[in-house]
Length: 291
Ligand code: GLN
Image 1: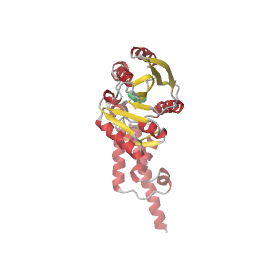
Image 2 (image 1 turned 135 degrees about the horizontal axis):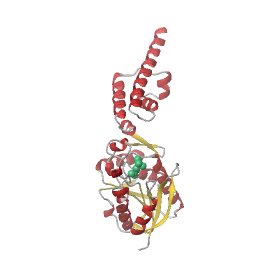
Image 3 (image 1 turned 180 degrees about the vertical axis):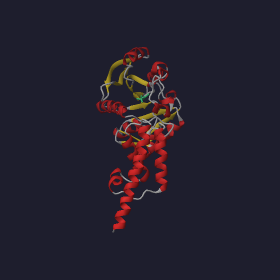
Protein backbone atom coordinates (compact mmCIF):
# COMPACT_ATOMS: atom_id res chain seq x y z
CA UNK A 1 0.00 0.00 0.00
CA UNK A 2 2.64 2.42 1.03
CA UNK A 3 4.68 1.53 -2.06
CA UNK A 4 1.64 2.32 -4.26
CA UNK A 5 1.34 5.70 -2.57
CA UNK A 6 5.05 6.25 -3.09
CA UNK A 7 4.73 5.39 -6.77
CA UNK A 8 1.87 7.87 -7.12
CA UNK A 9 3.83 10.55 -5.34
CA UNK A 10 6.75 9.88 -7.66
CA UNK A 11 4.51 10.19 -10.75
CA UNK A 12 3.13 13.48 -9.48
CA UNK A 13 6.65 14.75 -8.85
CA UNK A 14 7.69 13.72 -12.37
CA UNK A 15 4.74 15.62 -13.86
CA UNK A 16 5.49 18.65 -11.72
CA UNK A 17 9.14 18.58 -12.81
CA UNK A 18 8.26 18.31 -16.50
CA UNK A 19 5.73 21.13 -16.26
CA UNK A 20 8.16 23.32 -14.38
CA UNK A 21 10.88 22.72 -16.91
CA UNK A 22 8.54 23.30 -19.86
CA UNK A 23 6.99 26.41 -18.35
CA UNK A 24 10.37 27.92 -17.55
CA UNK A 25 11.60 27.31 -21.08
CA UNK A 26 8.48 28.87 -22.62
CA UNK A 27 8.52 31.83 -20.25
CA UNK A 28 12.18 32.49 -21.03
CA UNK A 29 11.30 32.52 -24.74
CA UNK A 30 8.52 35.05 -24.13
CA UNK A 31 5.69 32.68 -25.08
CA UNK A 32 2.23 33.75 -23.91
CA UNK A 33 0.56 31.67 -21.19
CA UNK A 34 3.61 29.44 -20.62
CA UNK A 35 2.06 27.40 -17.80
CA UNK A 36 -1.19 26.69 -19.66
CA UNK A 37 0.76 25.85 -22.83
CA UNK A 38 3.01 23.36 -21.04
CA UNK A 39 -0.02 21.67 -19.43
CA UNK A 40 -1.85 21.52 -22.75
CA UNK A 41 1.14 19.93 -24.50
CA UNK A 42 1.82 17.44 -21.72
CA UNK A 43 -1.85 16.42 -21.58
CA UNK A 44 -1.90 15.98 -25.35
CA UNK A 45 1.32 14.00 -25.50
CA UNK A 46 0.44 11.68 -22.62
CA UNK A 47 -3.22 11.27 -23.56
CA UNK A 48 -4.22 12.30 -20.05
CA UNK A 49 -6.47 15.19 -19.09
CA UNK A 50 -4.96 18.23 -17.38
CA UNK A 51 -7.02 17.31 -14.29
CA UNK A 52 -5.58 13.77 -14.20
CA UNK A 53 -2.09 15.14 -14.60
CA UNK A 54 -2.61 17.40 -11.61
CA UNK A 55 -4.34 14.93 -9.30
CA UNK A 56 -3.53 11.36 -10.23
CA UNK A 57 -1.21 11.04 -13.22
CA UNK A 58 -0.59 7.69 -14.88
CA UNK A 59 3.07 6.88 -15.52
CA UNK A 60 4.53 8.95 -18.34
CA UNK A 61 6.20 6.90 -21.06
CA UNK A 62 9.65 8.04 -22.09
CA UNK A 63 8.41 8.49 -25.67
CA UNK A 64 5.70 10.91 -24.47
CA UNK A 65 8.24 12.75 -22.35
CA UNK A 66 10.57 13.07 -25.32
CA UNK A 67 7.80 14.40 -27.58
CA UNK A 68 6.71 16.84 -24.88
CA UNK A 69 10.21 18.28 -24.52
CA UNK A 70 10.63 18.45 -28.28
CA UNK A 71 7.34 20.36 -28.58
CA UNK A 72 8.32 22.73 -25.79
CA UNK A 73 11.48 23.49 -27.77
CA UNK A 74 9.38 24.00 -30.91
CA UNK A 75 6.93 26.31 -29.19
CA UNK A 76 9.85 28.24 -27.62
CA UNK A 77 11.22 28.69 -31.14
CA UNK A 78 7.87 30.15 -32.21
CA UNK A 79 6.04 27.20 -33.81
CA UNK A 80 2.31 27.89 -33.33
CA UNK A 81 0.73 25.65 -30.70
CA UNK A 82 -1.94 24.63 -33.22
CA UNK A 83 0.71 23.16 -35.51
CA UNK A 84 2.19 21.17 -32.62
CA UNK A 85 -1.22 19.85 -31.61
CA UNK A 86 -2.29 19.34 -35.23
CA UNK A 87 -5.62 21.01 -34.61
CA UNK A 88 -7.25 24.41 -34.14
CA UNK A 89 -10.67 25.13 -32.67
CA UNK A 90 -13.14 27.02 -34.83
CA UNK A 91 -16.84 27.53 -34.17
CA UNK A 92 -16.99 24.60 -31.76
CA UNK A 93 -15.04 22.10 -33.85
CA UNK A 94 -11.38 21.11 -33.96
CA UNK A 95 -10.01 21.44 -37.49
CA UNK A 96 -6.92 19.57 -38.58
CA UNK A 97 -4.08 21.99 -39.31
CA UNK A 98 -0.35 21.76 -39.80
CA UNK A 99 2.54 23.47 -41.55
CA UNK A 100 1.40 24.75 -44.93
CA UNK A 101 -2.11 25.82 -43.94
CA UNK A 102 -3.47 29.01 -42.37
CA UNK A 103 -4.63 28.53 -38.76
CA UNK A 104 -8.28 29.53 -38.30
CA UNK A 105 -8.65 32.51 -35.95
CA UNK A 106 -11.41 33.18 -33.43
CA UNK A 107 -12.17 36.59 -34.99
CA UNK A 108 -13.17 34.83 -38.21
CA UNK A 109 -16.15 33.37 -36.37
CA UNK A 110 -17.70 36.82 -36.88
CA UNK A 111 -17.54 36.24 -40.64
CA UNK A 112 -19.39 32.95 -40.20
CA UNK A 113 -22.01 34.58 -37.97
CA UNK A 114 -22.71 37.25 -40.59
CA UNK A 115 -22.87 34.59 -43.28
CA UNK A 116 -25.33 32.52 -41.28
CA UNK A 117 -27.53 35.57 -40.62
CA UNK A 118 -27.70 36.20 -44.36
CA UNK A 119 -28.43 32.55 -45.13
CA UNK A 120 -31.20 32.45 -42.50
CA UNK A 121 -32.80 35.57 -43.96
CA UNK A 122 -32.69 34.30 -47.57
CA UNK A 123 -35.69 32.40 -48.91
CA UNK A 124 -33.94 30.49 -51.69
CA UNK A 125 -31.41 27.69 -51.75
CA UNK A 126 -28.16 29.61 -52.04
CA UNK A 127 -24.99 29.10 -54.05
CA UNK A 128 -22.13 30.26 -51.84
CA UNK A 129 -18.49 30.60 -52.82
CA UNK A 130 -15.52 30.76 -50.53
CA UNK A 131 -12.30 31.93 -52.19
CA UNK A 132 -9.10 30.72 -50.51
CA UNK A 133 -10.61 28.29 -48.04
CA UNK A 134 -7.35 27.27 -46.32
CA UNK A 135 -8.18 24.54 -43.79
CA UNK A 136 -11.81 24.73 -44.91
CA UNK A 137 -12.97 26.01 -41.51
CA UNK A 138 -15.37 28.65 -42.89
CA UNK A 139 -16.78 26.54 -45.73
CA UNK A 140 -17.24 23.47 -43.53
CA UNK A 141 -18.90 25.47 -40.75
CA UNK A 142 -21.32 27.10 -43.18
CA UNK A 143 -22.11 23.83 -44.94
CA UNK A 144 -22.83 22.04 -41.66
CA UNK A 145 -24.90 24.87 -40.19
CA UNK A 146 -26.95 25.28 -43.36
CA UNK A 147 -27.11 21.95 -45.22
CA UNK A 148 -29.59 23.41 -47.72
CA UNK A 149 -27.02 25.73 -49.33
CA UNK A 150 -24.45 24.68 -51.92
CA UNK A 151 -20.90 25.54 -50.98
CA UNK A 152 -18.04 25.85 -53.45
CA UNK A 153 -14.54 26.54 -52.16
CA UNK A 154 -11.32 27.41 -53.99
CA UNK A 155 -7.75 27.06 -52.79
CA UNK A 156 -4.49 27.73 -54.63
CA UNK A 157 -2.25 25.84 -52.24
CA UNK A 158 -2.32 22.09 -52.85
CA UNK A 159 -1.21 21.48 -49.26
CA UNK A 160 -3.99 23.63 -47.83
CA UNK A 161 -6.55 22.08 -50.17
CA UNK A 162 -5.64 18.63 -48.87
CA UNK A 163 -6.31 19.81 -45.30
CA UNK A 164 -9.63 21.31 -46.40
CA UNK A 165 -10.72 18.10 -48.09
CA UNK A 166 -9.80 16.04 -45.03
CA UNK A 167 -11.64 18.41 -42.71
CA UNK A 168 -14.75 18.35 -44.89
CA UNK A 169 -14.63 14.55 -45.00
CA UNK A 170 -14.02 14.26 -41.25
CA UNK A 171 -17.12 16.33 -40.48
CA UNK A 172 -19.24 15.01 -43.32
CA UNK A 173 -19.60 18.40 -44.99
CA UNK A 174 -20.53 18.38 -48.64
CA UNK A 175 -18.41 20.96 -50.45
CA UNK A 176 -17.31 21.33 -54.05
CA UNK A 177 -13.59 22.09 -53.96
CA UNK A 178 -11.87 23.82 -56.87
CA UNK A 179 -8.08 23.85 -57.00
CA UNK A 180 -6.00 26.70 -58.34
CA UNK A 181 -7.57 30.04 -59.13
CA UNK A 182 -10.87 28.23 -59.19
CA UNK A 183 -13.25 31.06 -59.94
CA UNK A 184 -12.22 31.08 -63.63
CA UNK A 185 -14.11 27.81 -64.07
CA UNK A 186 -17.34 29.12 -62.56
CA UNK A 187 -20.09 30.50 -64.82
CA UNK A 188 -20.63 34.27 -64.66
CA UNK A 189 -23.40 35.32 -62.30
CA UNK A 190 -23.75 31.87 -60.76
CA UNK A 191 -23.11 32.76 -57.10
CA UNK A 192 -25.54 34.31 -54.63
CA UNK A 193 -22.76 35.19 -52.27
CA UNK A 194 -19.01 35.18 -51.80
CA UNK A 195 -17.73 34.73 -48.23
CA UNK A 196 -14.00 34.78 -47.61
CA UNK A 197 -11.06 35.65 -45.40
CA UNK A 198 -8.51 37.03 -47.85
CA UNK A 199 -4.88 37.61 -46.96
CA UNK A 200 -4.81 41.22 -45.75
CA UNK A 201 -1.61 41.63 -43.76
CA UNK A 202 0.58 44.54 -44.86
CA UNK A 203 3.68 42.34 -45.05
CA UNK A 204 6.13 45.00 -46.17
CA UNK A 205 5.16 47.25 -43.26
CA UNK A 206 7.06 44.94 -40.90
CA UNK A 207 6.53 44.63 -37.15
CA UNK A 208 4.54 41.41 -37.59
CA UNK A 209 4.09 38.92 -34.74
CA UNK A 210 6.80 36.28 -35.15
CA UNK A 211 4.22 33.45 -35.12
CA UNK A 212 2.98 34.62 -38.52
CA UNK A 213 6.28 33.62 -40.11
CA UNK A 214 5.37 29.95 -39.59
CA UNK A 215 2.18 30.15 -41.64
CA UNK A 216 2.03 30.23 -45.44
CA UNK A 217 2.72 33.72 -46.69
CA UNK A 218 0.16 33.18 -49.45
CA UNK A 219 -2.56 33.07 -46.77
CA UNK A 220 -1.52 36.29 -45.04
CA UNK A 221 0.28 38.69 -47.36
CA UNK A 222 -2.33 41.04 -48.78
CA UNK A 223 0.09 42.66 -51.21
CA UNK A 224 0.71 46.38 -51.43
CA UNK A 225 -0.82 48.09 -48.39
CA UNK A 226 -2.45 44.79 -47.41
CA UNK A 227 -5.31 45.35 -49.87
CA UNK A 228 -4.04 44.39 -53.33
CA UNK A 229 -5.17 40.79 -53.05
CA UNK A 230 -8.65 41.78 -51.91
CA UNK A 231 -8.97 44.01 -54.97
CA UNK A 232 -8.23 41.03 -57.23
CA UNK A 233 -10.68 38.83 -55.37
CA UNK A 234 -13.40 41.52 -55.60
CA UNK A 235 -12.87 41.63 -59.36
CA UNK A 236 -13.04 37.85 -59.69
CA UNK A 237 -16.06 37.71 -57.40
CA UNK A 238 -17.83 40.42 -59.41
CA UNK A 239 -17.81 38.16 -62.44
CA UNK A 240 -19.17 35.07 -60.68
CA UNK A 241 -21.67 36.82 -58.39
CA UNK A 242 -25.20 37.51 -59.58
CA UNK A 243 -26.41 41.12 -59.59
CA UNK A 244 -27.38 41.95 -56.00
CA UNK A 245 -25.19 39.09 -54.75
CA UNK A 246 -23.49 39.39 -51.39
CA UNK A 247 -19.81 39.87 -50.56
CA UNK A 248 -18.73 39.18 -46.99
CA UNK A 249 -15.08 39.23 -46.05
CA UNK A 250 -12.83 39.63 -43.10
CA UNK A 251 -10.76 42.81 -43.21
CA UNK A 252 -7.97 44.43 -41.24
CA UNK A 253 -9.13 46.88 -38.60
CA UNK A 254 -7.69 49.91 -40.43
CA UNK A 255 -8.83 49.04 -43.96
CA UNK A 256 -12.51 50.01 -44.19
CA UNK A 257 -11.99 53.48 -45.65
CA UNK A 258 -9.61 52.31 -48.36
CA UNK A 259 -11.88 49.40 -49.21
CA UNK A 260 -14.81 51.76 -49.71
CA UNK A 261 -13.02 53.17 -52.75
CA UNK A 262 -11.86 49.80 -54.04
CA UNK A 263 -15.37 48.39 -53.72
CA UNK A 264 -16.77 51.18 -55.89
CA UNK A 265 -14.04 50.72 -58.49
CA UNK A 266 -14.67 46.98 -58.75
CA UNK A 267 -18.46 47.22 -59.07
CA UNK A 268 -19.63 46.63 -55.52
CA UNK A 269 -22.11 48.64 -53.48
CA UNK A 270 -21.19 49.48 -49.89
CA UNK A 271 -23.44 48.00 -47.18
CA UNK A 272 -21.33 48.30 -44.08
CA UNK A 273 -18.66 47.00 -41.75
CA UNK A 274 -19.30 44.90 -38.65
CA UNK A 275 -17.02 45.03 -35.61
CA UNK A 276 -15.51 41.98 -33.92
CA UNK A 277 -15.82 41.25 -30.20
CA UNK A 278 -13.09 43.76 -29.41
CA UNK A 279 -14.91 46.52 -31.31
CA UNK A 280 -12.52 46.57 -34.28
CA UNK A 281 -13.80 46.77 -37.87
CA UNK A 282 -13.71 43.14 -39.01
CA UNK A 283 -16.37 42.07 -41.50
CA UNK A 284 -17.02 43.92 -44.75
CA UNK A 285 -20.45 43.62 -46.39
CA UNK A 286 -21.04 44.62 -50.03
CA UNK A 287 -23.60 43.95 -52.77
CA UNK A 288 -22.74 43.35 -56.36
CA UNK A 289 -24.02 46.14 -58.59
CA UNK A 290 -26.36 45.48 -61.51
CA UNK A 291 -23.77 46.47 -64.09
N1 GLN B 1 -6.05 38.15 -38.56
C1 GLN B 1 -4.87 37.57 -39.10
C2 GLN B 1 -3.66 37.99 -38.32
O1 GLN B 1 -3.31 39.14 -38.33
C3 GLN B 1 -4.71 37.88 -40.58
C4 GLN B 1 -5.67 37.10 -41.34
C5 GLN B 1 -5.61 37.34 -42.81
O2 GLN B 1 -4.69 37.86 -43.41
N2 GLN B 1 -6.66 36.95 -43.41
O3 GLN B 1 -3.09 37.17 -37.67
